[in-house]
Length: 137
Image (cartoon, rainbow, N blue to C red):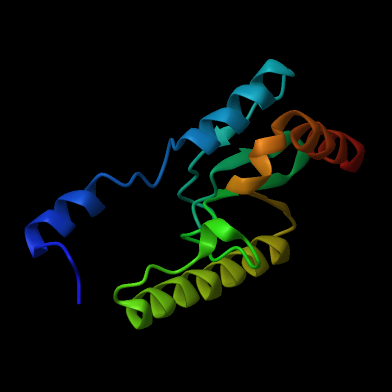
């Protein structure tokens, strides 16, 4: 049973962004500051990747821990209400993510997933990612 009315829940859910989230913007600013150029939300690729680095044939997904079901992450805990619905929703998201990643790999792309919780230590983690992108080229 939901504690909010249908209208209130609809309003709350409409405020959740799917692109240009704070974690995505943080990663993009970091990449741009290092001189890496990229495209965002490319609709012609499976999964509409958050960041595409064509020069390096690399894709970066910036995933929210809750929405994408980050394993063993405290941010990915299911709500106490409508648990079955949320479990089904997150499970479907994970299946879709795996499918899209596989398709991108089959197309010859390297795929990197950055989790929202990893951005707490952003500088070190992002530096490692950029180093791996540049080495892979």
